[in-house]
Length: 148
Image (cartoon, rainbow, N blue to C red):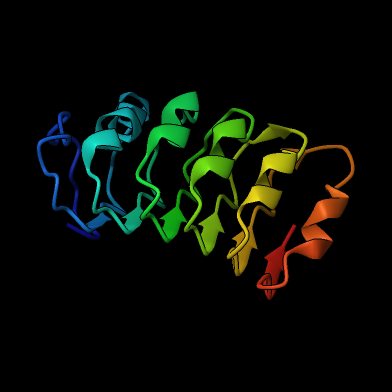
């Protein structure tokens, strides 16, 4: 469902237990649809989430940490999101790509990113983040592509 004009879609994704790939990027989704992240918690096979380039203009819920630990790629860039990076992001233990670029994220980069031991790519540039980067990021041996 990439690059369509989707504005409404299922809000209860939890029944799709075998869903592995969700790509709703480049649509017209708006802030109420960030609740999709909470409903994806029961999708235990989920590996890739692409919600980038939408008009979400909301807050990343703390429940992001309840998503499946099978998630490897998570894209939520260019969505006008106005929140901090939730601490629970560090629970996504198999995450190798995190892209939250070009939003309105505030606060500091959470040290829980350092719990993502196989993280290879992180992109959080063009936000309103402040404070120093966690020193522990330098110890992530898999980290190869970084945009801050």
